[in-house]
Image 1: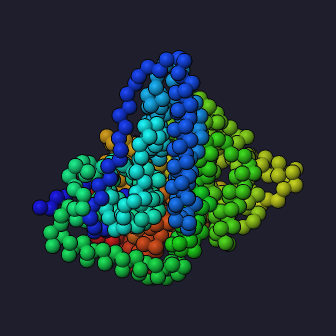
Image 2 (image 1 turned 135 degrees about the horizontal axis):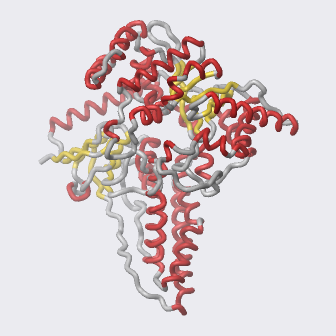
Image 3 (image 1 turned 30 degrees about the vertical axis):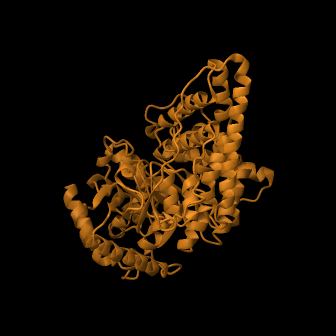
Length: 576
């Protein structure tokens, strides 16, 4: 008899194949007393386990396919760096000395402490990084117990559907090496390592499928729909026929979209649309180039600081930005200045203070940069310097007032004066834009448009601030909706302000990356999209098959609607 399970689809695609239920060896950690005279021996045992865990990861990394992109290998590297961090080794050793306990228990206590730090973070991406701590601690525990965690070397996984409670980056990469059909986990969310890696590797995946290991038997025939988060066990003939047909359609669709690579983006009525990509690091450009020879409309520079967990000096920033620019081979690069804050923090934090009660409303982005100008000037110098080598623009996040703009202009002049004094090459006429993501800035967008070289709409925060909804709070995130009448009105105000002043306007938030809203935004007058690489060709196809002249009257009617359900129905009709 067929069974149906639901989870969260995090990597699109359909897979059909036998189930491989992965049961990781579990270690039951108990506490026991270690006499003072044996503590040194116990600490050495801990150190040996850490070294063994590191050796295992190095061995796994060496087995990974050679042409695997560096940004994917970075997941393994982050675990290796964590094993070198004193937070694990020395922290657990201190607990052994303080409480006279065994290494396993000390490691568990230290792991719980570190996990709590991540749990207290507001930023959804950083909060899910507690998985790194758990995965690394689990590997050390296996080494302490001298139990194999299981790395799939002796199992043929080709075409199989992996069912697991959770997967480490090492697990996922080794499975990709074996060409698995799909991944299903009981835990995790859209920002988990499994989700991110599965999307990057093109493996269909569903997470949050509770009790999957209990309900699915080894070898059982499965259908996994990564688009909608559906798992069907022992499917009947009708279901198999349906999903095999869908799989053929998806493969044909992918082939069709690949034919759009490096072709113009032009609507049916002859309007040329600029379509660019979002990146976090220079290595992401390789992934973008696999989709299209596009420029970058959003380079999130804070990731360099977060990954190094420290303030990065001017020279390091300059080299990173220059590497990104050169990889684009003449295409434009828009660099967003730091969007650090109390919820996206680093150890060597500038302007340290108590954790804000509501970090999204607190000292972050340009507010933080203006409070600690020395770090900001270093970044300004790096961006001004790289702009001398190609088509570079600078974008300021979370602008709210012209007063801030005056302060920013003053700091830019200081940065230029420093570079002149040092006789360093830089661009005197760098284009500077404002990221409009606060309702106050949206309502003042015409004023900003007169003063800036370009504007960019950041929909993630604009929607959050407009609707007073924390989109990562499970209690209220169901209210987070880009189609709310107030959100659409603010977006239209920003676009109209740019048209009136002749100021270029783009959108780089998640709304731009969602194919459901492409035609709506075209009808509102948006002609510049900066999107995630994996949806770029799909959005290009929608644009190429749209007629803006026919969309405009329909979109005007949508903007005059106040009922959310009515708006959603009308937007769905646009896409038909």
